[in-house]
Image (cartoon, rainbow, N blue to C red; front, side):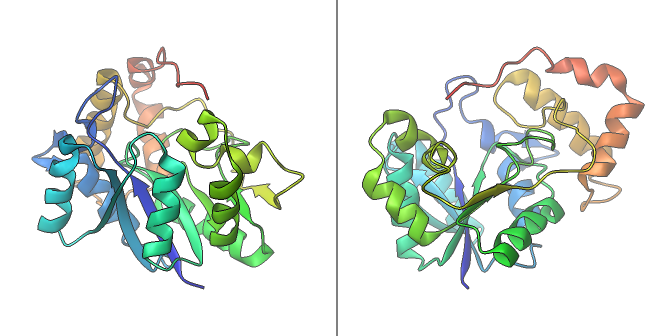
Length: 241
């Protein structure tokens, strides 16, 4: 099975434009995420799926400079962008990652992929039944399921959010969830606002130099040692479907 991780990325974030190339310790956030994902035991290729918007020329330049595979597609129809990327890179299965998760834990990613492969599901995630911190979001699905969604989904929500067609149609797709033993869903480690960025900056500056491969458990311990950090972005509401 050829497993391709597709990371959707664009510069035109409404709440924090250019967030994925914002720098911590002189490096863009996207480079931290890629470094972590490249350690996966299951992913065959990593591809950045960006848009045709000229703003995203910067992302393509980043990919070329760092020898990262990339694809450009529709800005609004992200489902089509995923489908065409997966088809171009001959994926049998797709791992969906969003570029606003710079401290994603590759062990969590691999756990999700392993569960998906071992149980022959069409769609598996750690997001629908959330027990992991937001920012470790991982979804795995078959190319056949993606193609079905691409051809059948008509709601704007499903075209924009890629996988919502799967988990809102559990009678159509064989789906399941990966859960953590302890519920850490209160933590928000994604980057969508300036407050989010400040928290992630604190985490990377504290942990990365000591251990570039820090796990989400290391981050939980850091948060527990600095309880005031939780409130940096605790008030931020995630965008609804």
